[in-house]
Image (cartoon, rainbow, N blue to C red; front, side, top):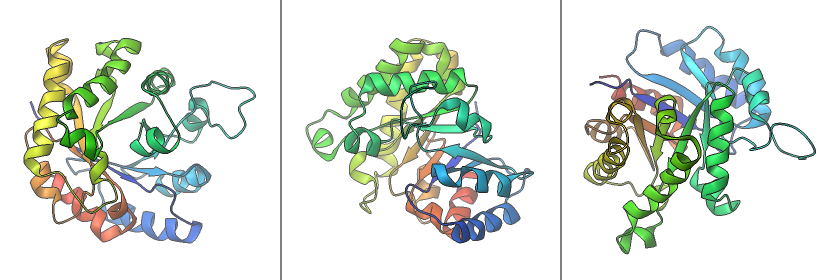
Length: 252
């Protein structure tokens, strides 16, 4: 079956009111609802309102980069799923490698965040990936299966039907290194088979996107792989021409 590709731009901690408007205006002007790819931008919290307004009436969807596992209360600096829903977020990144490595997020915490995003009616984009040391030691699949299994234990396999997986090898994020199309396909296929062992229907429809130095010049080869259903794009998503080219590469 053909799965609708997703290309999501993760702005990380970048942007300004002026730069955001220039970027989003270009995306909205040149992307139409007739394309065969879903497009989203993952925006820093302070700019959710601005970008939500700029995207109104367009086919580009709003996404957040993180969420609190708590619903409300005395959690200074945290942002709840209900707050993100208020701004019209469609997707929320969960367990990005920078949250895991720099902020100490555990598999259990990531699984809890996954659950609260779904309970709020949004789509979690669950990030999975190994470090360079883990890849060199042959532990890639055991790492990504462990990260995925924590979520499966929390919510069950049926809930993956309303989610997206993002394989992002940590060694390829912001380094200029990129997994080869064959390396990406190997892990994506293994993840799909891991889910297939629990529910073949969910596995067949599950979108698994690749993240890790996706650029205009490598996107086509990555997206041509049978189990790569789009991309989670970092730095290239801050340049309208580059991001549009990546979206076009997925629009097949």
